[in-house]
Image (tube, rainbow, N blue to C red):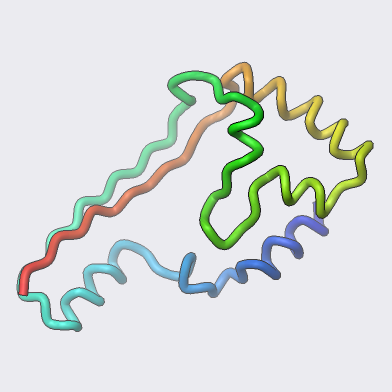
Length: 112
């Protein structure tokens, strides 16, 4: 797993602007550029999936535009035998609906 950490950090270091901000930074930025009224609504959810994911969908999505899909990462980081072992373990969990999803959204309104 150490190789995967290096792999992802090379693609997106922890200080990348895509990761290095939070909802307070959004409000501050809007105020600094001249918006007089700023409203932010933040929603965070940690919950089991509403329905189990399909494996093919799960491995072909990405956490954000700067990182590869899980399928691409597996192909770059793992041997065919490791991919098979990892898939046998993870696929059963994904398709059974085990685990929890994490989602956060910030809705921002501003008026000049």
